Length: 303
Image 1 (cartoon, rainbow, N blue to C red):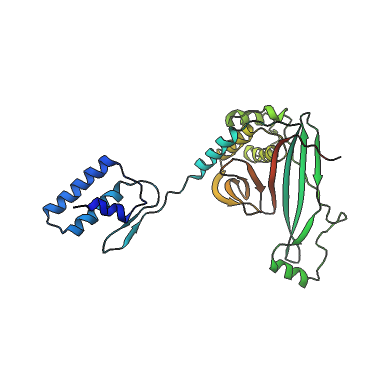
Image 2: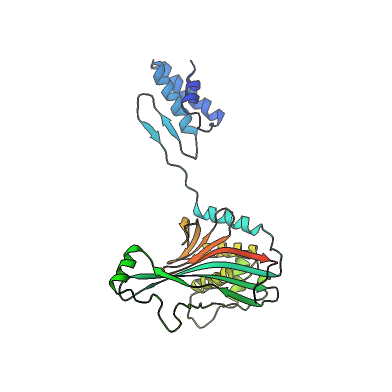
């Protein structure tokens, strides 16, 4: 009788079971079947079940001859483990070389108007920081449009007013939050606990913010607007993921549709590439900073 040969033909893609456990379970199940005088096709079904029982992980389909398919759910990766792996890969990267640290991003910001439609503003921004800490920013032109077709129709119904308000028109600036005076940024710790302790030396004692909200805001600056090393960035991911009230979610997409693993705090999130640990975006309900490039370079900013 070649019961297990039949199983191999029916389920060629199922990973092999542990040989000792499979043999022992097959012997018990088939031995009992023979003593009860079950027909051959029943013994083959029991043998297939024996293999399915000892398999672990993955998506398993055990076809029962003459019966329904039995399926077990695939094992879903733990988001915290995905984040940890991404952080490990980022931390393994060298600090980088070059005269200037360059960060390119596309900023999406949304405004809800009194007429009930939402307008989206988009602007490209390049930040340069040299080894001495000198900073330079290049900004492109703002493009503005109603967010959705429904918003566009509502805008037209309102008489198609100017989409940019204020005396500056579409010249939209940006507020930088720089709470830390710890320098140089490139020498900050690369271990989460040590980095947290170093950052909290700057924590204001006025009680205006909780430690968690202040650390979140500080981390956003260190990730978006400072020449932090890959090791420090990876430590920031781990630091934030371990704070009370923070959560880690996988499969989160940024404003450009790129999916990654995210650390979330309320309606705010930091989205990270699952494979490299690189920062993809920092966003909340109305604003998204989509990172397109980040690191040291021998290029120089234009005058």
